[in-house]
Length: 305
View 1 (cartoon, helix red, strand yellow):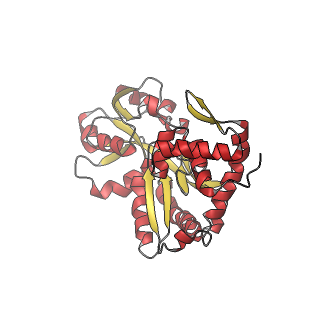
View 2 (cartoon, one colour):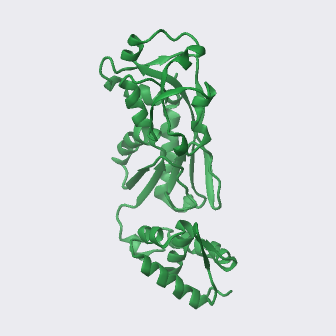
View 3 (cartoon, one colour):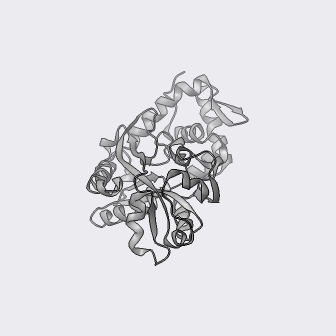
């Protein structure tokens, strides 16, 4: 298959459909209509005289010819996104970088710290906090912070920081319930936790390290909601220690979170990832190292020391 007659305007539609699998999602990403996506893909297939996609129940799947075109299109994308290669991009005074991050660290740490860092940086930023794993390989974000180490082509990743979680509940809850002195006592209390069928990573299943038979009084896909529920006194919650320490001064009396069984900790890690050609984008490179420096400075906060 010869690619010499293909152009970037068509290839970006090809990449969007390859990544998002459906016309509607590709169209939303490109800010166009699904009809435009369909017509552009048809034109590209006619130009290359090759069928690039096969439609299945799960969406559009690359054919062997499409799989051959994919790395070529991705190389074009990386080349055209390089500063100085896109004339339109040169007109943008402040480049924009998107950080994709899981909600706990996103809302409780990254948002405030990065916002302060931006005050002295000519950069616009988008912070996407979602209860799922975002992916560099699907262009969900320029930089991702996740609870699992990601894998994929054309991507680099490294440990951002280890962190610890503990068991917390409100002062009011402690006053109304028997003292907790051992792990056996934990089974006699109501719990705050995740919605089982919406847990996107096995690393979040730390409740099972206590027991498979805990009684839940409140479940949420949101770590922030879980912390609020614990502050309201509905039960015990496993929360990142940094998250509680960072917000404790703002907690009103009675709702302040106190730690239960302080010697019991759950150890986890945050990973940071970006495209492996990150060095070609100075603003992404600067934010990457800025994030690493921030968490290095706050190491004791994450480790609960």
